[in-house]
Image (cartoon, rainbow, N blue to C red):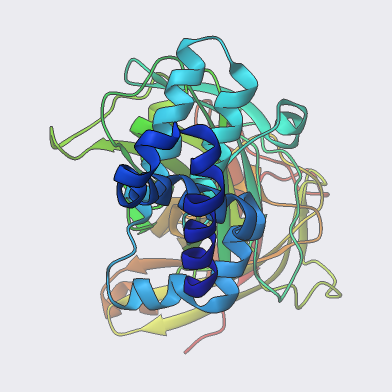
Length: 406
């Protein structure tokens, strides 16, 4: 290539310049004219030999240019991408909307990870719509949950709690978020996804996406749809369990979390599936055709007893029922009791799907003398706000079972 460039420069100096300059000047300025022609020739050389746009980028990729420069920490995604961002800002300021979007897309394409992308307005409907304002300039306009587990597919049966949708996940979860900046964002905000249990405790979280990884929020164009996704693992979390998905936006410079305008940033509920075995059992009691008790077991322990219950959901329950377990003596006197939400409060009944099998253990504390008087147990469900119990098929408001003597 160098010999071609040198030959082209000499030819231009010898053939083109004499036709453009006066004869009296030519003999005195041949060397200077040749030097002046070098940049012109170099420009022609670049135009005719180097392809533009994606073709050029593809050639660089195939040649290993990006990998080599990344290995030497010399290739700066931010610097290269920022050039397109500056052009996009100029296009936006001059009303060239299409050009601004095109330049932003080019800036995004340079990044090695593509978790943030521009979204075509026609694709917005693929997200579950919502509107939560973070701070003064950033709006979360929608979300989509994608179950990446291989064991069982997801159920999308809606759960009517605070307007959030339900989702079942087994191994890990990919959370897609749809954003729109109302104005140019002043800082590079970080976005994090948290999972909360029913008591509001954080049980899992993603590492907050750094502001410059993979595309700074301060580079986003106002009023343009931008998607962002993060993946969070559910390994190690109890099953079954009902969890809430909360989105947080951080301002690292100010060391603060941006306030959310609704639900404290909670966008959805998801649940880990319970074990499906045991569904063929005949129930020992059915409560108002909503839930069936398939089995019970009383386990005596040194400090008391544990009552293990196996439930099957018969229908979608619109309420959260409290389960009670009463331990009684032969005279029907109360020895001890346990009242609480199923699975230690982790899996309320409004999340149960028909056919699901739920294992629920209630523990009570009592000394050995009291435990020795245990004769039978009573089990039932009631609503906490009014104390109303669900009846069983016989009309009683509790199912009673004898307990074997130790």
